[in-house]
Image (cartoon, rainbow, N blue to C red):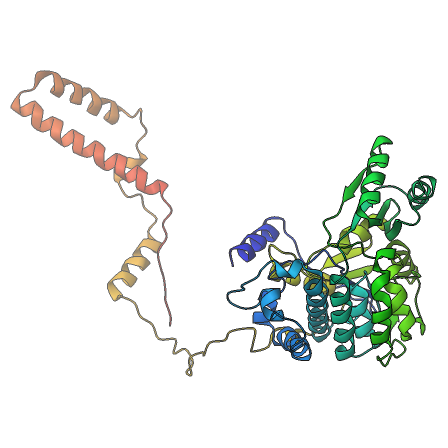
Length: 460
């Protein structure tokens, strides 16, 4: 509540007024599903408590995953009152599954409010949510793929590492080939024109970071458990392929951009082999963002626990006309959700306000069952005094019109001085009356300086 008051005061001070963009055509909206690394304990907890659409979606996912994990998913994600293992969410086996659940529930909530996408794209594990929303597979099948993918990856040896290199793709490729790292290091993601993620054996990755450092190329080692999107994932591919072959894939029902190609797909995702390749091949985030932009889409809504893709996307397309809108932030998720909702409305999205302001979310109180009687309650004496005060035009004291240099004023001051010097009984009496006179004059002048206000009528 305090944050809301502060923001209202800020907008009032800055005279901020929100206008709805009245356009004949609805602007195109893209959904971006965040990948691994954005998770944290308690993500979306306020939404789970407040919005039944979000809560029902999470509970449905958990119902499909009964007996799949040793720990309760609600406890791992932080929705229970006293989570026993708040760090479990950072284990790959739980990270990928909880991210899928959160983003799926968040997507259903946005659909209820009217923020339906025209095109979707996900980063790595986020693409599974995008494919589910697009109708490539059902929710139950998506959970089956994601949970088994996470389990298989968790079982792999932890001998890999990942790092982000702030250089162009050709530059990174040159280092890989020149120093013969082709077998040990792969490009895992192209996140921007000069934002390349490498993945592979930990020794080789560390060596390459040192070589980059000597040439003044900045790099950053990522805190991950495995070398995702690299050849180190190969041992789990065959088992995952067997699981993927049991899925009934369908053609997408809306536009979806592929992580593998960076282009809009038709039926490429509708095969098990696509999702097998998805494990090892790099994420083409930068080309994917460019593809969406070429579709004349200028609004990007990030579906995830924190704004990761919004920041990367804005560096890929540094255009002030493009709107990057995250759904949640760790510090104040509800406020961010409402800010993004208002941003969608301002930019022309038709929001379903009735679904937002339902009885479940907004507390109501009962109004009185009778009309106001408009009966007067006032003291007659005070009413008469008010009328006299309003009609009064004469000065309060007759001597107020006398100038300070008037002979009478000068004489009074001199007489007061004489009385003060002689101090006999007669002069003391005269002094007393002169002082009273001046007191009335001073007080009267002070009263005239004050504004005369009074209550006239009070009705109930």
